Length: 73
Image 1 (spheres, one colour):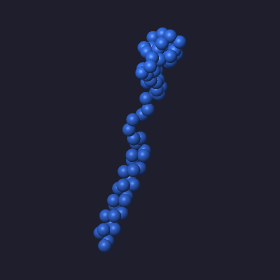
Image 2 (cartoon, rainbow, N blue to C red):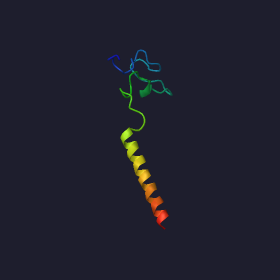
Image 3 (cartoon, rainbow, N blue to C red):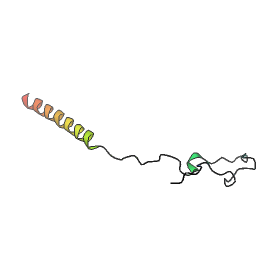
Image 4 (cartoon, one colour):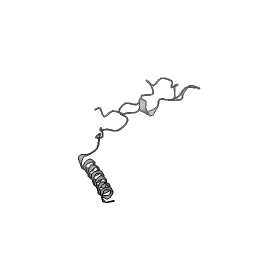
C-alpha cells in the first residue's frame, strides 16, 4: 500500500481549467474516483458462532414450551 497523497493531481484531472476551476456543465471528480479511498480492512462476513448458537437454543426452547403446552391442553 502506498502512502502517497490520495487527492487527485489537478494537472491529471480531466475537466479542470487552469487555476482549478471547472468548465460550465462539467462535474468535478467524485470521492470514489480517488485511489485508496474507503475502509482499510475487510470486515468479517457472516454470523459469529456464539450468537448463532444462542438464537437457535432460544428458538428450540420456545418451540419445546409450546409443544408441551399443546400436549397438556
